[in-house]
Amino acid sequence: MRHILILCLIIGPVQALFAQALTSINFRDLYNPDGEVSIMLHPVRTAKNLEVYYQIQTNPLPLEKYDISWEKRDSFTQRNGTILNNPDTIVSEKVKKGVWIFDLPAKPWLLVVKVTNKETQKSWLHFKKIEENYPVSGWIEQNNERVARRYLTINQAYAVSGSDNRPFHVSYFHEDFPAAYPPFAENESKADRFMFHDSTFQVNPGSSFSLPTTGLYLFQKDTNVAEGFSVRGVNKVYPRFSKIEDLIKPLIFICTQEEFTELQNSKGDKAKFDKVILDITKDKDRASGFMKSYFRRVELANLYFSSYKEGWKTDRGMIYLVFGLPDEVSVNDGNETWYYSTTRSRFTFVKSGSVYDPENHVLLRDKRFIEPWFSTIDLWRKSRF
Image (tube, rainbow, N blue to C red):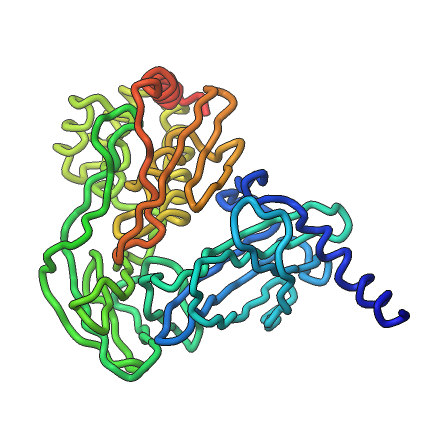
């Protein structure tokens, strides 16, 4: 009886920490740059297993101030699941890393992690679906550390790893992918299932390589199947932009066609670029505030949503850029719904992945978004953010 009591004291509080369906949780902190806790889960499929590399980072408090719990759940509506032992490695007082290794499942399930501040009892959750057909089958390393982000700096040394020693065939795509259509457009921003590459090269596991130029790179062991992983080659300042020619493209959402054409015709001339921005905002101070706020959003959209194309060009990146951090983010079966109280707008993104981006989400567009879109664009043009 004494041993049973001790076990209940150990497991009971952990179960109580969860006791909530994922569909009822606000996940907005996943996209909050000022959040106290940052959680990253990166799954990779091998021949017999699914490996989930994770990193948990806290700021400003050290990790010892938090409880970390893991669960296996069968669905998004399940309130409690099976408690999992944590295979963690503490890297520093504020960073914890590790790798879960699971057998490929007969049916999908959810790996759920919860981080709770012991003093305030505020919690942060993240999850990943564990499924047999997940297409990612390799990863990138730099300085013996796994790189989970979707972009790599060109002309830097990296190594690629996978479940065996077969070489990776790398396809390069030079295409400048278009920005997402506005939320009221009839078109959708779907990723192509298959694209024609511009060039190819080969990389052996463990050997050093670098990406020679910007663009999309697809790494595959077998080019006849939709398995592999993709990364974007980017300049060293990314996810920020610094060159005038790079600053122009994200402004497509707030410019008229005539203004955008004028920006394109400036061809890197800062004086001409500044004149257009000043004409839009009507005031030098407002112009400065607009540029600072708008391109901070561009940077965050690139940070959170970079995929086969730059983050600000994706559907979620576009909404994040224009409307900002949502007040509420809810999930159901991998789809996301974002709610903004100021415009009373609710945007739903349906998961539509491919080998180029397994986490791609497509916005359900609707004419009802015309008014909140243009009223928000008007606030940007008046620099009221």
